Amino acid sequence: MTFPIFRTVAALRAQVAVWRGQGLRVALVPTMGALHDGHLTLVRQGLKKADRVVASVFVNPTQFGPNEDFAAYPRREAEDAALLAGAGASGLYAPSVTEMYPSGFATTISVAGVSEGLCGTVRPGHFAGVATVVTKLLLQAGPDLALFGEKDYQQLQVIRRVVRDLDLPVQIEGVPTVREADGLALSSRNAYLTPEQRAIAPALHGVLTALAERLAAGETAAVLTAWGRDQLLAAGFDSVDYLEVRAAEGLAPLERRSEPARILVAARLGKARLIDNIPA
Ligand code: AMP
Image (cartoon, rainbow, N blue to C red):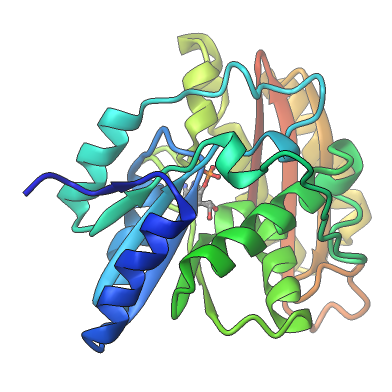
């Protein structure tokens, strides 16, 4: 049987309704495509908790800033479909931009608090774009469960907030970051790195790991993040957008060292802007 690709909300809903009628649990894995093993791990994790997994591939224009890589973002639908079929997904939802944003589209979901700071400062409007498209995807597919990577930790927190605030009837599952053997988090944007830059990139995870250890040993976050920035620049990164320690739940500034924390970083290397985070 050929692997199903749904292009319209109606086609997706018709299929989900059939599965529902059969009493099956459905999971959704939203992506922007150029799939790698991080995405496929979300699919495999979905299959442990649901009977059918649909992945969406939609390069969402509204979450890219005017000077960002929307046009250059890799698009490889045929390869993505083959990878999804191999991982056990039951279909791909690949709507066009006009299917997602028909003429006259005027609604934006914006999430205060958790969208601010970190990537929200450097990418104004980004999380409103994410929150709007993810809300639409969840309402279009109506899954029991949707899976997101901790790789985009602030995004995951924004989505959890939207689902709670709007009473969306879906369970959100966060999946730990999948990494290369040298620690670099898998990302579709790693394709932008030259071989020299690829050799520098694992310093991002290396610095996060060192920071987590030194934080646990009692050093202060302010001293450590200043040290970490210097380390990244010395390793060859062009600039550091942020390197911060935040509360793991909700990402507020850390008040007590005893609460679960997250160290988050974004840094630029050539054409790539790489992000990563780890628990602390
Ligand atoms: P993207 O295609 O980059 O928008 O990512 C789609 C989903 O895959 C998001 O929930 C990401 O957090 C997740 N994801 C991306 N990279 C990884 C990774 N290395 N490990 C786990 N999940 C990931």
